[in-house]
Structure formats: C-alpha cells, structure tokens
Image (cartoon, rainbow, N blue to C red; front, side, top):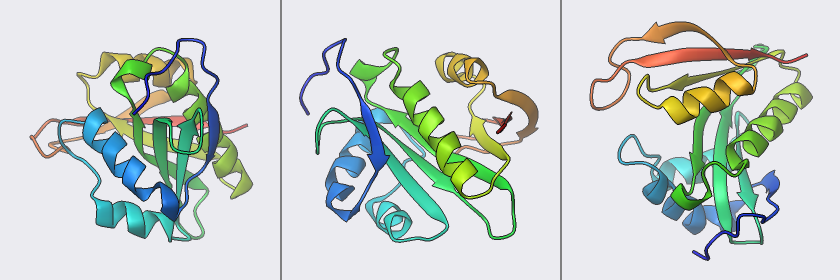
Length: 157
C-alpha cells in the first residue's frame, strides 16, 4: 500500500465487491486478532443489514474502513469494526469514518450508534469519546483472547 502523506485528504465512500482484497489486507494490517475473514467481508458487502465504508485517497489506496450493522425495526446501529492503517492513525481517518457511519445510520432512521472497544485501547477510547460516544456498559470476556469489552453509545441528533 502507498504511504500516506500527513496532509492527504481522505474520501469516505461505501465499499463494493472490487474492494474485497484491499479490505482483507487492511484488516490483516490493522488488527492482531479478532479479524474479519474474507468470507465475512464478502457477506457484509452483499448484505442489506450491513454497510462497509472505506476512507481512501484513491480507488484502492485505503487508509481505513468501518463495518456497520443494522437490525430491522431497530433504531440502533452498530459499528462492528473500525480499522485504520497503522501509519494513518492520528490523522483524522477514524473521525471521518465515524462521521460517515453516523450519517449512514441517520439515513437508515437510527437515533443511536453503538460500538465495543477493548479497555486497553486508549487511542480508540479517546477517539470515541471526542466523537460524543459515552460508555454505558461492558461485556465480559468479549474478545477472542478473553479480554472484556466496554460498550459505548452515541446519540444521533
């Protein structure tokens, strides 16, 4: 993947099937565990109850991605995954993806956006709290390594 200049503008768009290889590569580079598989991404790209967003500087120059889930008759959307390339962290990519996720949730009639985060992921927690998310609960032993998850929610005005 090309290196990211500090001033590179990122455009957030909905991913499509042609993005599958790049999404899987991003997932492998962004996380040590709890990764989405190629099959899961393929299923989410074709699903009415999911939306995959990518932040890019060009067609296949991905800086980050977000996977959103929606349930029928629910006004709560869920950010299932938020991934950024390690070298693009701290440059506003995560914030841009969260804004796009909130906009997508509003378009689907949702009034809240939820997500889970590892308690030891201080950078992600700062990002979420700056974006207006508030912690409201926890899941015990949520991640594959047995770590708990903190639950966060953002009201969508």
